[in-house]
Image (cartoon, rainbow, N blue to C red; front, side, top):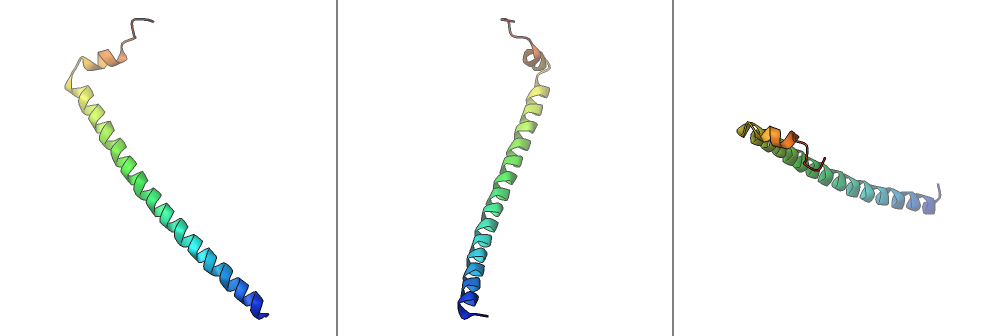
Length: 69
């Protein structure tokens, strides 16, 4: 095998390794952000449930048709 060809292959592997590390970092950051968003959604869902159960008539106000209809 030609030395230049071997050097080119080594360079390509090095670039691919760097790209793979960058992509892994991005995926890890996205997973962390998704976990944060899921926790926020769960907290908001629980908050909405607690607000709807606190007042018995609050559900009526939410389901009520606006006066302009």
